[in-house]
Image 1 (spheres, rainbow, N blue to C red):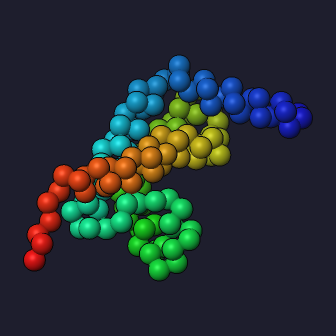
Image 2 (image 1 turned 180 degrees about the vertical axis):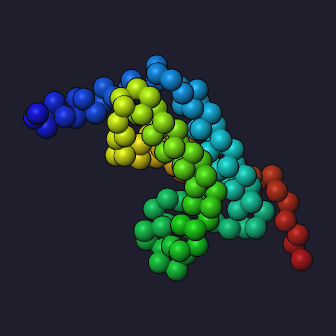
Length: 134
């Protein structure tokens, strides 16, 4: 099997998840991750924290541990559920487990929506949340 055939097969299997069993998770899991991101963004605005920016984890050594811990705390459960559901899908459809594909699917369903939503929610919420001036 050539590399091109391998990647074509992986791509076909990833796209096939949209039609197979458990396809409802492709809507539910990003929605849950979005809800978690909105809650975290509102919390950031209330606590006057800077907006969550993914690359801050890499460039801000002082806040790195706290940002990772906080992000994982919010979206970790959604990520784990996404992996478990994808493994169940693999067993039902392919009679085998593809852990790399499970990680890709979980990241797309859990982390991507979370990272895209949390920072903008914080910025928008800051405009509407009134803080004490004392």
